[in-house]
Amino acid sequence: MSLAVAIQMDHIAGVDIAADSTFVLALEAQARGHGLYHYLPKDLFLRDGRAFARAQPLQVRDEMGNHHSLGAAEVIDLATLDVVLMRQDPPFDMSYITATHILEHVHPDTLVVNDPVHVRNAPEKLFVTHFPQVIPPTLITSDMDEIKDFRAKHKDIIVKPLFGNGGAGVFRLQPEDENLSALMEMFTEMFREPVIVQRYLPEVREGDKRIILIDGRAAGAINRVPAKGEVRANMHVGGKPLKTEITPSEMDICAAIGPALQERGLVFVGIDVIGGKYLTEINVTSPTAIQETNRFNGVKLEAEIWDAIEARYHDHHSGRAT
Image (tube, rainbow, N blue to C red; front, top):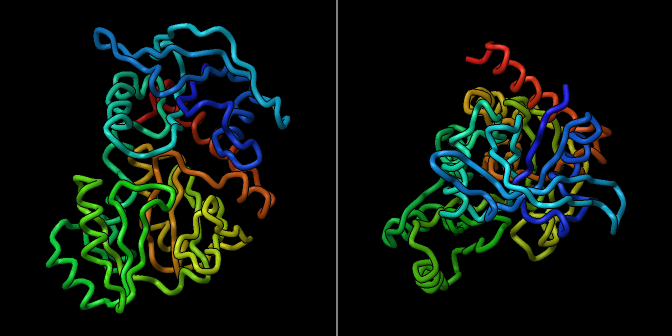
């Protein structure tokens, strides 16, 4: 059965087709005969309680420099579509949150992936705190005295914005570092939210593993090793992707969080695990690393994701959804 699919994303002209997860999701949807539309988050709007987008028909090709074609823009009532992929990049700000409220008007009859209510309710660095048995020592606060006490106890700490993304604004403060007060002054000027403070995990030198879960099930992983002199393992700041396996302790983490992801309609999720036992983030907004995982493991995760999306769509429309 052919589905009408809209992809809400940053402009497809700018994607790296050798690495972008949304691009291979679009390729797979097209290969299955689904019709594609493309629109930017700013083109989403609500009129008289109905969600619309000024969207363009989309065709994609795995050809560097010639990877897409867009048709004429038209205003589409999203309730007339079958699936919307919410795939714009963070930051998770009020614009992002507003988009979830608008898309909530059509979900689940138009299946939004991931579920916009639970994208809104599960920001990556806060959702992990519901699984205290698998996270490192963590503090979320604006109180300088609490931060100083936490540092006195754990010595070597990481400080980062609560709603940051892509490794931006991540600082390691070793015991002799005298920059904590200045750093907090900067964060206070830049953000109204608390910061997140965690014990530094030296195991990160061996890698920060990205594990992809599909409908609550562990489906694949890559390891990302920080560059020398860098605390962050994100690939766009020099982290090196390496082939890896999911260990038994990491499978235990996936088993602990998987049911909560499935219940919330979080179909495509990327979690970050350090040292095989510390869950640091649950990425639900626009997870990445499909292509890297495919190449290292000989899999095709975009096909598994579409299998899960189609199953959810058919279950709902056949009356089997709970």
